[in-house]
Amino acid sequence: MKWEHEARQVVDAIPVHEIIKNMVIIYAEKIARKNKHSVVELQDVIETRDAYFEWFGQAKIDKIQKAREEGKSDEAIDPMIELNKGPALYTIELCHSRFFGCDRDLINVREVGKKVKEKMEQLHITDILADKACEPLMPHSTLTVSISGCANACTAPESRDVGVHGTAIPMVTDIECSQCGKCAHACLDRIIHYENGKPVINEDFCALCGNCIQVCPTGTIQAKKKGCRIMVGGYFGKWARYGDEIYKVTEESKLYPVLEACVDLVKKEWNEQHEDHFSRIVKRIGVEPIHDYIRKKA
Image (cartoon, rainbow, N blue to C red):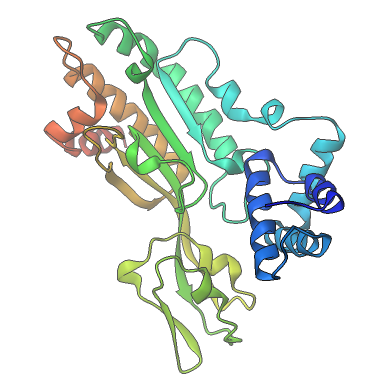
């Protein structure tokens, strides 16, 4: 779609990180089509800017603007680059909130990522995997830990060796509801409806993403418990499988004994005679050895 020169200048100046920039451009073109414009005009970009400013909030916009004024690129402030720098047989993935945070965050992925790296170094996973290898090492020889701030999972924790994302159990309080409908709109699983002027959440199908909690303007919906979900044994590829859930909602501190248990499983069960993978170990023998390890260490 063609753009007016002034409109393009304005959209280029909107302070969002580069992962979002292309989304902003597409959204502006959507607004232009909605407004029945043949080119993207200044009015369309102003609507786009206002929508994104409201979505991100002023605090996050200020952080991004400050980084831009200091001449910092996204790459310069990307903690994932430092976490995966140098020779290692583990990879740490972080969702996009690693840059400037996200209004959906339930855990701080930057801080968790640092602690995971410290634990992986302490456990000497690189030496263990290298010694277990039966062929030259390649990128698929690594053990991957994927960390996402919320259950919307902008990374892929469900399909990685170890996956963690933030979770929150919502509850409806006695605070009067304005019936604004924001919670029902924000629920990706469409499990919220209204009865007698109050939201009702179908807990059996709740993904614990926390969206309804964060958008509720009155505090009618609040978090009964916040924490993280931890999964192991996921795999993405020919034999794709979701990881097995170790915890649904637990304290972040529980992640590090899980990592210890996973490394212990590699030591004991990794087949050195042919190419193996952590997910295949979990598929073969299940997660009971991981629970046993955690119980013994508790």
